[in-house]
Length: 447
Figure (cartoon, rainbow, N blue to C red):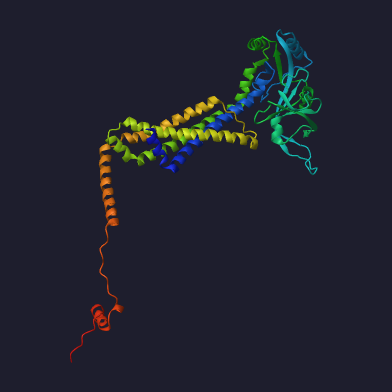
């Protein structure tokens, strides 16, 4: 049965290439979109999850790290600020707490280092997540230093994320001019890439002065002692201080992901559905065309005793072989595209999980099974008696044609009479020949 399916598939290599190419294109689109979604999900929430922060404290209305719509007057010399600080200092089970300033800055014009001819490199617009953290505790600071000085920034020194460095060509030692200040890059860190924006770290006091925030801060980040339940502490803090909203690390990371991915998911679902339909349509049409062309042969098989189930399995195997070949090519193309696309487009962040590959493989098998449904219905409607009679008529016609060709090839042709040439005859004979074949002279009229 597999031999029949293979012969039907590989008899028309162009049609097979079109069918496999359509399925491979569908698999490529589905795999790339899922990998992009996983990559963005990993990047967007990775900083919050990898930071050494157990609880994120914000003002009412703030939910995530990217929007940073929080304002806490923690250093207010009045009674409110003093009470909040004393409350945090005296709370049991708290290892340390720290202030953190986060401000999203879009379209910031940054002047980079001079070019090779001494011309200032200006006009670069960057999307930054400007973070000011307390360098004593290090909470909310860079995840890991990958290049440069392994120390906290001081004064107008900054630590930039390696994704920002790669995108805009900034290296350690360069001086950036943003606003009215010059900032010296002392190191590059990892883990601060939010796909659309990247982190820039400075000290808390410098950030407060640059942003003119006065005595306010954005978040309060807390690290608990080992063995303390973060959920219970968060609920207790909210019940005691109604003006505060407390999130655990997992909740804050989920909210940050939702900020970006909630707008992407509907579009992603529609494109995935369209890619599935494209692969289904291409595979179904090619398998259906191959089945219609072989309808007479299938009818003969039914006439000699083959059941419908055997023929159905043959068509299904053709569709499955097409799907498997398309899946292998599509996944291979995805791996190749992922290797080179991120170098050209930094936002093209992919992460392929084995479970996603298994899901795509199962989707391809379902696609192949559905594509075989219409050809199977066409097989079920074939009348084997009519197909057998048509095949007999075709056989008689082919036999007559074959016999005529054989007889015309091996039978000696009849000899045609040879016409005598004029030059081989004598003069009287030539005159007689001309008189018999040439035009007759007009008769003379009697006088």
